[in-house]
Amino acid sequence: MADDRRIKRYSDSIKRAVSEILEFKVKDPRKGFITVTRVKVSPDLRIASVYYTVMGETEQRRLTALALEHSKAFIKNELKPSISSRFLPELRFFYDDTFEHASRIDALLKQIEDDSGSNE
Picture 1 (cartoon, rainbow, N blue to C red):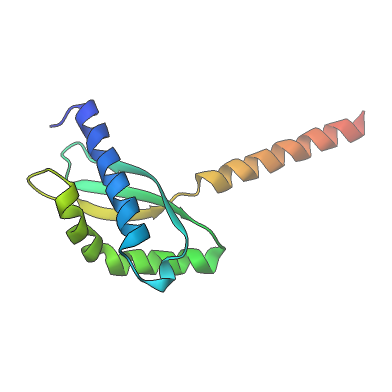
Picture 2 (picture 1 turned 90 degrees about the vertical axis):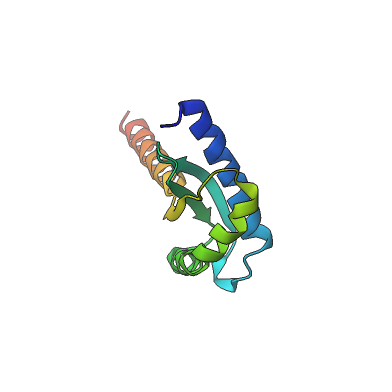
């Protein structure tokens, strides 16, 4: 088992490397404008959950997910020189909808504020 600082350093290095690979080496036109927001690594360092956002609507998100799934082996292969570990983690990609949730909450709070202001 790895300690928390080691896991944090490991996930930061994976995030940096995957971001660079996606930006400069993955040529799939379906990927769109993608940003890696965070990487969570399992305690045994065997699984890396990569969270990303992409500009665009639902269709662009779907295309990006397809591009990432299609490029997963390539990304893992390109990750080898950047990661100093006995083995490479399995990459799992997840769309990060945190920003959308925050926007929705903000809109609801604004609506409540507007409703309470009009009632007074």
